[in-house]
Length: 247
Image (cartoon, rainbow, N blue to C red; front, side, top):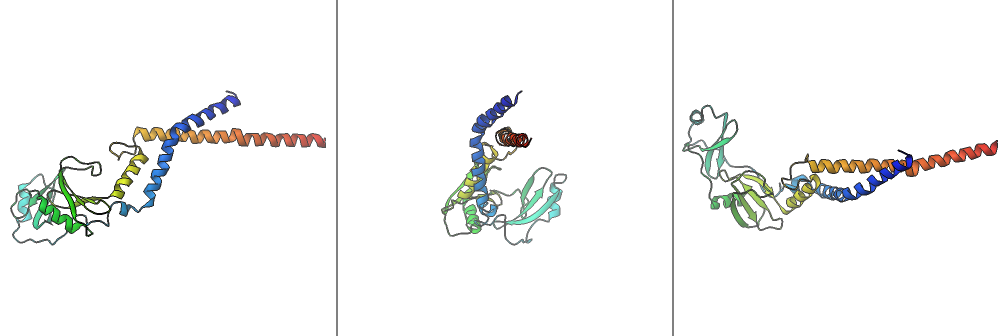
């Protein structure tokens, strides 16, 4: 292939593939800018509510942990006592799952009702806004992407804060705000996973990255053909003319 044909080939790559990938490159830059504007702690809403559980552990009237372990012999690997909405619960960890057992009755812990969830949400929330709604979801929304059923408690504040809470323990599992939702869209555009929004090794982002690399390499080649090589030729000519004049 001649030098002229090579230059035309790389020009074609740079022009048409660059046109195709240019929109995605712009989205990468814009979404990356959104993601670096805010601290990740603010995005996660760590200032909006207390996560996990709190409260004092009381052993009064509870079944000894040895009896609970004996009842789940061969299944339980560990057992932990913890408070939950005025109750004491044992968390029995198995090989693949965990059970929540009422420490005073030995039965599996019953789910909390809406009134208890609202009370726990107000206690965990860091603010003065009222609870706007509390819903027990059986289908996970895109901003949760985890187990169901789960309680979604929304507050009437400027951040559109939502708490996602365990239906049995009442623990705040995570916090979602309007800023988090904007960040999540930016993340989706950045990794090009438009469904689950968590796979940054998908074929689409690999293809776009490969095409972007091809555009960059073709640009470097064109710099050689259009800037460096002509300059090198001009210098050779000047040296040749200088040598001829001196001879």
